[in-house]
Image (cartoon, rainbow, N blue to C red):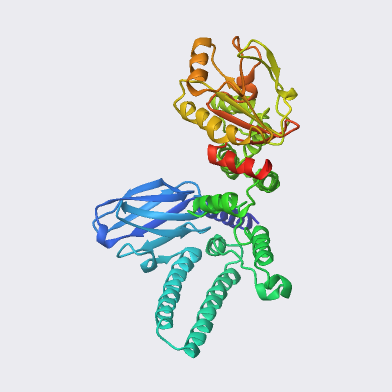
Length: 468
């Protein structure tokens, strides 16, 4: 009985030590042409490279990268110097031997990691497919129609062969990161032949069908909830393309998709941090009218309620400041009412202006842009539409009446509504974000904000469409 327990104890200790041993990485590298050099193990993270480990190769070019915990799976790089390096895929098995006589990833030889070795095999297969594709495309330029048809079919077969190869990997290594990595950039395409004839024959309906299909299937092959995808060069461009080119460029259309994305990744702190940071910055820097409303929503729902655990106090202060200056002048909102003193000392109420369109502008004469913009607004826009339902509520933002008078006189600006707030009591600079001038807002008859931050040409186009 004592012998039995001794054997059992030894077996348990062996299994325990083996388990502990498996929880660290050990990558033996052999680069015979780089003997004596310092070599770094680096990993891709979004669009940058970061060092994970360093070793100095011996006289035979051998070295070891080793650590007491597993590395995050992803696309890694053996970095000799800026001009000599190659990538390999690091999967679940992180104890293996890597040999490379050069710096071509396809020439690697890996033993001990089935997933990493399968990646090398795939690279070689991919190169074969590319060579065949190039040869066929070259032939296509010079052959007759019958041969062209054969080449097109052959190219389609190559694509099918690529898909079959990847599926074979998935069958052999189910749930592996390698399979996710290989299909990540494959976006399904709509088979237009399956659509009703009336859609196929209509350019506009066909375009709409393709847009909806891409919107619905864009992430089919890319698991954006998997943290390992951050450790590739794919995640950032994939997300940026989705936000800027796939989603319909309007606040009401974008917001539900962005919020769904964040809900799906919130359980993964690293992905959530990147995605929330990207969306809030993209929203405030977007050239799309109305996208600042998305910034305000994200700020309130993810930053100012404590979810943004990574944000410093200074970052939160900046976010809070932007919300204060943006929340009252979002497109679609009723413009905050202002009662300001005009040049003659009388008070004018913004909401009492009877006009189909009111342009509210905030300016200061010493602003270089204002010196050009305000006279152009008067001469090229106001003069053309003042008898068609346009009024301008021009706010001088400073407190120097002499300066104000000189500017109005120089540019003959006395026949639109000129107002100021000498003692800054109305908070107009906060209500209408007077941090940067000129500030331009377009209000409809009911004083709802319909546009802002437009240049002269954009104002002309808007008024041409609304004041006919």
